Image 1 (cartoon, helix red, strand yellow):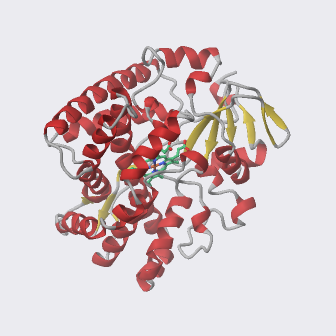
Image 2 (cartoon, helix red, strand yellow):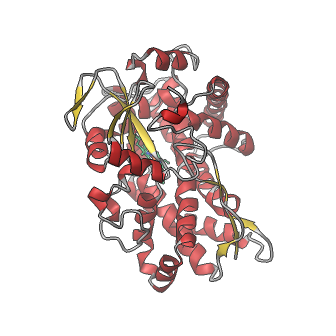
Length: 402
Ligand code: HEM
């Protein structure tokens, strides 16, 4: 079968610029799709939400498909990247233990207390914008905000930010289908280098403990043997990467959505109290994380179709968020006053529901409120350039004039 004959081909040119027509077609033609490449793809809201809550595995080592195995085995000895060793890819009891350690130091109250600091960071980034010049909002706001926030929360020492940004950008490709063996090699190398960097950061922090997340996690490791050295490295890397690679897309995709829908931008200007709900609608309308994965441990039935055991299942969050059977006929419209916008599945659902959801919501709201409030003439000033990723999809360049 050639690529062009596939019903779902994420490598199709243009897919990552606008995947929504393909998702629409998949929901209509085959919402429980057995892909010829060995995985299954779920695109309907109810099925996606149900599979995330069904307690399937997240351990990719259980997948038996020979092609999948061959690719994973190129990554490392155990077939996992550094991210793959974090709670994101662990089942109970490891998942429960790792997650509870992070939950303890990442409470809703500690997140809410960050609002003044986040507002200060946003304002100083907006101060730095030269109103007379072209502005790339991805560089000026969407990236530096979450990167600065998570770096400060963790208490990262001064590091080579550009290098970390590059490594992290490569590493997150492990969260999507990869066809090119060179990319698999690059992911493997980035994983090793990132692990080494995190190891150095942890060593530094042991010498310089402070009131921050990293010190708290190190203390959790020292306090009995609840966290091994490798686990500590994996958790820190996950928090660091998940802390910025996702929220950058929330801010940038949200801004693109607003600028493409001037009536909604006008509504937000008239009703700033809608900012919180607008963030929920941005998350629904253009999911910062487009998909997640599960592995069946036993045969699993969805809509009467039986997915065999030890099979890789992609749950397409972005498609679920546009499912007209759940959202109604205007599912493809941005409506910042949509009443049930918060029912999106952009943060996942079930045992792996995003630990950083409150932080992402806070950063997204403050960024949009201040941006829209500050620049009444905000508009596009060139074409958006998408980052070419299937999963953590967002603009690489977002040219605006203010
Ligand atoms: C898990 C999305 C921001 C930390 C997840 C999952 C999704 C997600 C979909 C679940 C994956 C699955 O079920 O397989 C997002 C989005 C964000 C965001 C859309 C921003 C708009 C953040 C931030 C942090 C964070 C800011 C931390 C600072 C985590 C962690 C997990 C996770 C630690 C793993 C939870 C577990 O496995 O139990 N996120 N995330 N996320 N997220 Fe986020």
